[in-house]
Image 1: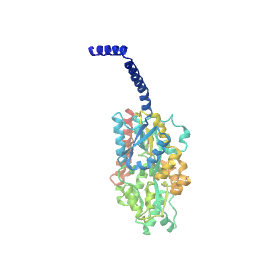
Image 2 (image 1 turned 120 degrees about the horizontal axis):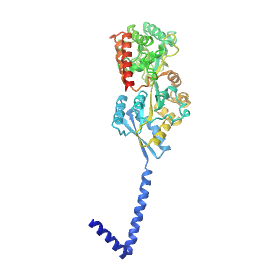
Image 3 (image 1 turned 30 degrees about the vertical axis):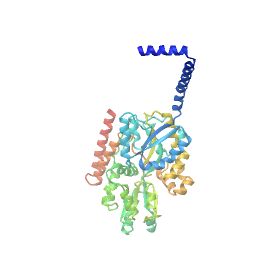
Image 4 (image 1 turned 90 degrees about the horizontal axis):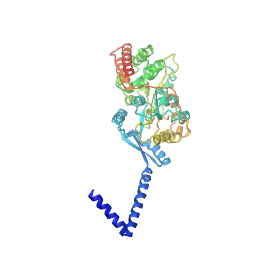
Length: 442
């Protein structure tokens, strides 16, 4: 108190005794006032930074989108944080950041099956009222649907993916046959060409106990007219005859020698390498394999056709499991309006075209499949549109990861003769129902 009193007395004496002191004081006060006004203005002009965690291999092509966005929006930057190559590990990183309560990420790059989990946990902003029907009209309907949870939109599609049936069109033509229209045709053609020694194996698919087994199975299940889980009613269809027949079909491909015994251990690259070596007639895989099987050093370059997965006899269409990635907004972001602007730009027509041309990914916007400039570079895209049009979704439920684990275990047991298809599907159905009932109680 004595110090403050002495300081006030000093200023009072100097103020009355010195004109120069009074002028200097006014100058200091003026400068301080200007700074108090200017600092907030300067701070407000600093660009907003939106952080986005991505798989490391996806970052280079995504920079095309980011560069275009920042050029059009100089006040907003998008920082791409490099994550691991594993989608599961990236999901864990996002989950951990949300559970800690202060996620550093503003934009969320999501696989199709993450949306229900993230939305149910309350980690995403609801985009339903922010995106008009006109904004959504250009996308593949299933790609849009994969971003919904309980009829609310939380994710906009950036790129698609869908299961493809590859076939050796040269071998089929040489034998005077036509591409298959049903699963029975696929089996018959396989056996015919195997007997002619044209190929060692007929049909390759992913049978290891992992998510790839599920993506393959939902296609066959759709082809038999069955379903896994209805996301609206939560009905489970695994113990119905259609599901049992789907599992039995896959097991028959092994027991009848159309698929190799080791197929129950195969992932995508295992099957792609065997097919590319010329040792199989049919391959179920993703669109990425097209470029590889048509490389200059590939034994089957120019000899491959693509089509949607075929159905069982008597069924209208088969299924192609929808994959792909999209972007949503973290509920914890401090910049929701800037993030929304980024989401709309990243998924808009012109940036999407540039992104697809640079990356070779499957478009989410339908008209890009037949865009002349894109088709000139990727001639198979019109055929891919037919595949995407038959896309089947995995169930949009909050407990998806647990439901997938259940089906993986029992389906693997059926395919490796540990249980009959009927026993396995009945057990999987019962455990899945208990999972969903527990979720209802919570």
